[in-house]
Image (cartoon, rainbow, N blue to C red; front, side, top):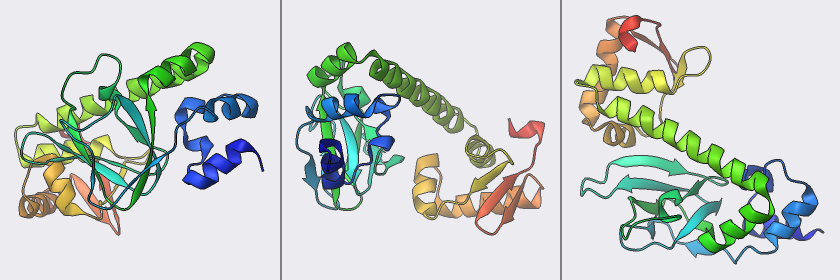
Length: 223
């Protein structure tokens, strides 16, 4: 069994899901992975990162799930993380004394932390990984721009419709979130308001609910 396979099986992390290694040969991946530190285990509900408790590292979820909430005292849901995804970009390369959010283990979770020094070494020896990281940051900026656009809406209907429009597939369908409470927190509106808003949007013909999906009807008012 190869060293890479042993590492990935032990941490339940498929290297194909580790975006830093995209486009590298198996030999190059082996060399990089051999420098990885041991992963860290967190219990369900345990804080992984907070404003004051964080390391200057990029954290990759090896197994389990986690989520991020705001540090403004309201605990507004920001994003969820599953195996292969990462957090901590704001904790490296010129970060401040405070981390931007609180990351909490949703289930028992294992995290691989790659610190700034190791990242610099990887980027220097394998330039393709630096390109992969820049692409990741670009996607993150686009995600944040969409979120700011949603949160800047003046009323609940515009907020919900803007959010649904931002997460639709090629056929204008958006999956209905299983946890509507988390969605309402993320959008900054009450749960009852969210349900009422969805009803109003469907009545006005701006969306159509079909099983576990919502179809956003193309309309200039949506954008």
